[in-house]
Length: 445
Ligand SMILES: [Zn+2]
Image 1 (tube, rainbow, N blue to C red):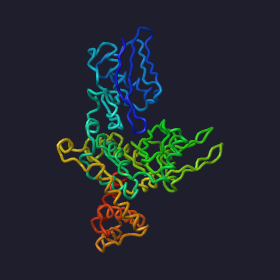
Image 2 (tube, protein in one colour):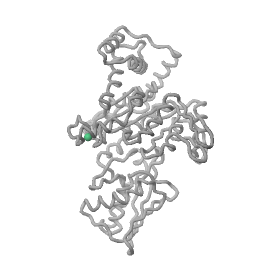
Image 3 (cartoon, protein in one colour):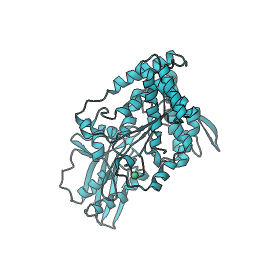
Image 4 (cartoon, rainbow, N blue to C red):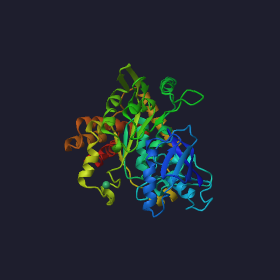
């Protein structure tokens, strides 16, 4: 009546193995989860029960205790659902003994028994047991790929984002690789300078987020707060001692907001001031503290509540539901994103058989060269080729660009030219920048 199932949880961007021990005993029917579960894990009780019943599988009318080991590690997210469900089935003898041996199970369950995407699958795969990983079909590719195949536009947008420090919003259905692309971004950024390293280490130390060796942080951090994180966890604060939040922990690195459409409006609005100033001032009864918040914002969202988006033809949302979803993002916040990238589910053939995309190392070298070119100009702009100027002028005349938009497109075009190693900002660079910016109409029509 005891089963132990392997799964994994994300700590920051690193996967940690977790063992789900399920014990089923006689006694009053009940379901308890122990071992530092967060709210989402505690709620898995209801999802797992509904999913099993919807799948025509029995739910034991006995006492079910789930222990998550090691007990010292906080377990977050809904990705443990699948392992808990398999554990219940194994503990009640519904699964043949030994069939889960050497396998790691990761996935969120829908009430109808469907399996849903889990963020951070690459990191979770790292923590998997030797025989294999059981994951939602859409995540299988993510878990099995070392580097990003397909999604040429997405990869290009990330290079531009890293080279010019442009905030980027990716819009696409589940399974289109948004998380995988975002997780690749810190690898494209250069190693921190000595000064940045001190700032980042100091913030991480204040939040007690340093590793056990307390070494200097030298790589750009990657922080991916959950949409259920509190505003204090996001921007910093606290009632009795002021602590830096996720946006400060992401300073000189990447702040990734997955499922941005699910974040509370107040949390998103709280990002506007730090995005503007690069610092966050937190005032509480204990006083006011300024924390650094100089991060590269990468956000991902589904095109609509059902996730499919109008372009796939499979969208089940009403127009009103779609409008409600996009209204949550204020125009000033959307305006912070220089790059808005529509993503589609990649063609499986292209993923498995097509040529591999450029490796992260090659992309990182291009980004470093582009940053070098920009730094060598010391703030000056590269000359705008007459063809590029003509294209911008025509877009202004047509009303496709505002004066503010013109400024932003010019900045992105400059970064694109730097990435291509061009001396002048030409028509093709402006064209590229227009594509990367004007895709915002897919989010906010
Ligand atoms: Zn929809």
